[in-house]
Image 1 (cartoon, rainbow, N blue to C red):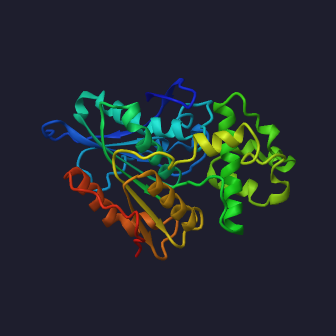
Image 2 (tube, rainbow, N blue to C red; image 1 turned 180 degrees about the horizontal axis):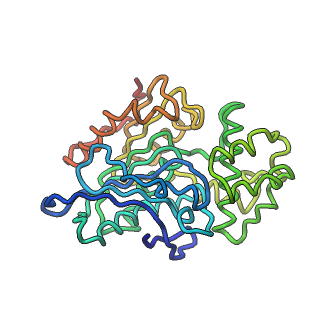
Image 3 (cartoon, rainbow, N blue to C red; image 1 turned 90 degrees about the horizontal axis):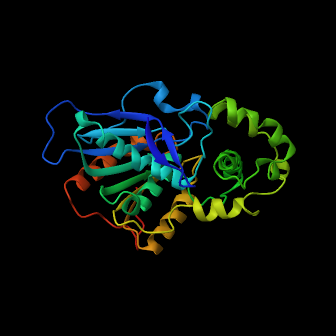
Length: 321
């Protein structure tokens, strides 16, 4: 358990995993890889650290950290799902927590990586790193199939996914922002089913909401209604500023949860900000297998950052496979 700060700049306790080597550390300490996990739910039972096991390594020889995000670990709290500042701070502060463990010998050089919701978190960690943690040296960020372009939908199936993601984000936002009242936005069926968010994890949440028709889902659409609109579209939408460190953006053409056009639109916006971004689009990869299908490329990209090699910039070209 370690300290971080939420979107309201309040000190919060966060849980997670730190895995470190017992071998002698190199000069300057081990590099740190900070992993941001995909969607699991909004309550403590859904925290990945409760499953045990080490933090993912992705070929990085060093210290590995994996945050649960603010509100997801401690009992009795609710996670502010897709809150960019909260997620990004949690990812960064996990690195600081590792550096506070003397036996870990963690250095200042670090890398961020995440998938799905975690891709969203990694993007915000990259954007916030220099100002939030200037004593750390972020070498680069990997975002695999990241949640992004929160106001857009890309076809009928994506609209269903967006509604489920949206209701989780709305419920979580109410836990972080006192001016958000979930009942002001939710339709009657959504409000009746909302208890599942406080008691169950992702699969049960999907089952509870997937059958609710789109035309009655919301009483007031949070993407169109203040104050939720500003929170979702301005505070929690990644890709609005460029980070100093490079980005590796990865997605698959068969992704059923984060539509490939969502990632392509994010890429275009990142390029407009001047963000150095390498885009890898994998033909036929879906939301679940994009990680194993791109593991070699991801590990090679991370290794190149540790070796201080110049990063490839795909802006101005269409790189795919």
